[in-house]
View (cartoon, rainbow, N blue to C red):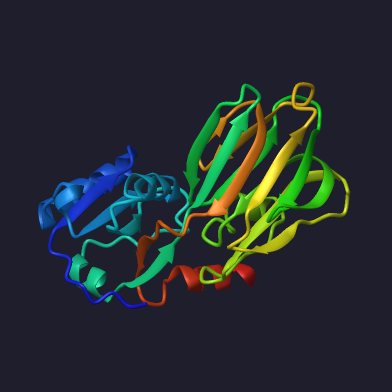
Length: 259
């Protein structure tokens, strides 16, 4: 949807790269730089890694986030320009993103809670393949998956690691999650599943002592997990701003046609 707010107070954040730091200095001179707590909008200067950090940092604030590409990968970023930034912000379109909530229980019984904007992924920790049991909404759907791992991806994260693992690209407004195996060994031809974003996903680690598994929510890792629960956290809605014609919906659509 279109953003009609005025964004007078801007908070800039930048990655450590020379390119991003130069942009930060330039934009601060032109528009000032307010503390995030007092700002109308947060503008991130860097790549997708910085955007994820910024979204995590502002996850519960309700602040709109607008990214400009001054990094390596810029799928979540708008094009960089110093010209008339406030007008661009006022004309931007807003996409709402619900993160995933991961509840991981390790072999000692300790529970770890983390949010993920892109995906929750499980990986084998040693040379031996992981053995996993998959339950959806408390019903067993796969008694045993032998693989390097498995991931649950949001639409926003479907073009990241999920795509590299041969998972499907999801339109940003799709009420879906992608469940994608990582190098599946048995069943060899299983390519994963599309789930409603209301699904409660449980992945149990079989033979957890012999075949240890780690769980990662974006950048937060838990080692030696026994059980991982994943659901879409509807209590949090992050606001991302994109230039007209450069929306996340449009970029995901282009990606599906190889552009």
